[in-house]
Length: 167
Length: 167
DNA sequence: TTGAACTTTCAGTAATTATTGAAAGATAAA
DNA sequence: TTTATCTTTCAATAATTACTGAAAGTTCAA
Image 1: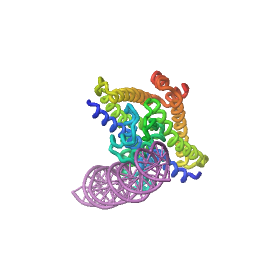
Image 2: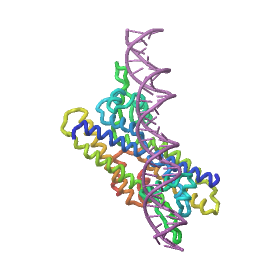
Image 3: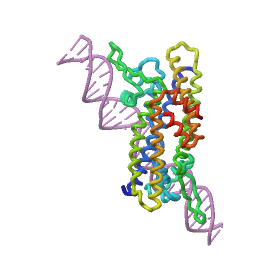
Image 4: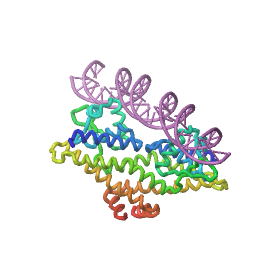
C-alpha cells in the first residue's frame, strides 16, 4: 500500500474507533494525524489535512490538550503555535485511562456508593434485589479502579508481562 | 434515600455511563432496569417505567439480546414475552468486553496489521514515523487482546486477585 | 501606540443519531 | 380458517451532537 493511502486509512480507522468509544471522531482523527507526524503541526496543517474549519480544529486541539495527549510547542522566532502528540502508546493508554476514570468512572462510583445506602432493612423483594445489585456493582467497580491505578503506576512490560505470564 | 428515588438515580447513572462509552443511553437504561428487577419484565413494563415507545423498547431489547446481556423468558400459559438480564456482574463485564473486542477491536487490529506493511523501505521521514507508530500500535493492541482473552476465560476472583496481589 | 499575525469564541447551521407510532407480520386459541 | 393478541419494522420526525466561519480577542514587532 502507498503511504498516502495508508495514512488516510489510519486516520479513518482511529477516528472510527474513537467514535465507537464515545470520543468525538474528529478529535480522534486530529490525534491520529499528530501521532504519525514526524514534526509538530500547525492549526493550518491540520485544517488542510482533515479539511475542517479553524474553529473545529481549535476546539479539538484544546480538548486533546485537556486530555494531556497533545501539547503546544513553540518554535523560536515563529509566532504560530505548533502541536505534538505524546508518541509512547503505553503513556497514551495511561492518560486516556486516567482521564476516563476521573471523568466518568469516579462519579459513577460515588453515585453507586450512595445508592447502596437505600433502605437496607426492607423486606420488599424489589428493594432486596436492588441492594444486592448495588453491592455487586460497587465491589466490581472498586476492583476495576484498583486495576487502573496499578496500570497508571506500572511500566508497560511489567504490567502486560505479569498479566500474560499468569494466563 | 427512598427506593423509588434510588432506582431512578441508578437508571440515570447507568444510562449516562453507557452514553459516555458509546452505548445508546436508552439501551443502557433498559439494561439497568432489568438488572435490578427481581422478576422478568414485559415490553409493556419497560415502556411504562422508562416512558418510551414500543418500537424503541423493542429495538433496544433486541440489541441487548444481541449483546447476550438479556434473554427472553417464556411464561407457560402466557403469550407475552418477558425479559431477564444476566445478573452476575463479572459475567456481564465479560460479555461486554467480548462483544466490543469482536465488533470494534478486532477490525481495528486487522486494519492496523495491513497498514504495517506500507512501503517499509522508504527513507522518507513521514513514512518512517508511520511505520514505527503502526508497529507500536499493533504490539499494544495485541497485548490488550490477550488480556481480554485472559479475562474471558478466567474467574473474577482469580483475575482480580492475581492482578491486585501484584500491585 | 498601531496594526499585522495569529488564536479563540460562539451563534447559526448541518449532520448524525435516536425515537415515535402506526402498519404489517406473526402466532395461537377458538 | 378467523380473529384477538402480541411483536417487529420502518418512514417520518425529534433530539442531540458536531461544525462552520466571521467577529472578537490576544500578542508582539515596529
